[in-house]
Image 1: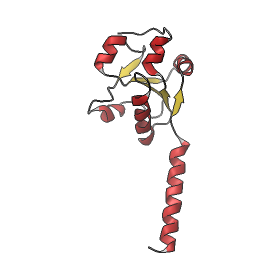
Image 2: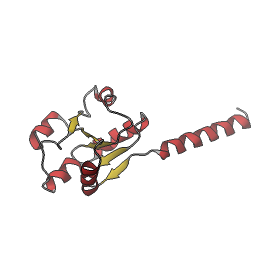
Image 3: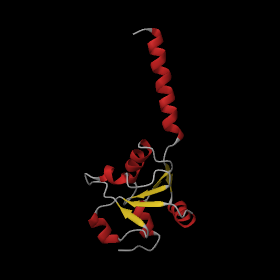
Length: 130
């Protein structure tokens, strides 16, 4: 490989890395999640937990359910509008963090990861629906 090829590869990797860094997802708290839900009419809320978890604790009103562990998860996220903001949550934030990376890498414009998830939501006494 020539020096020019090495330089071209290095420049390409740098540009690609910067492009990914332009649109990372944002980790947000319970308070920030509440503000986002109340102030963003176009917000798409996605519950990533299992059916059993939802049966035990309910879900946030307005949330759609896409079980992160199901084989059709990645296919289902394509039903969301990539141009509208998305708030992801699970039980504590691990699955939603992984899902946020997937959404960002597939072209979603604005993705929020609710750190603390349903554990924080219920711990603060916030209402849920079945």
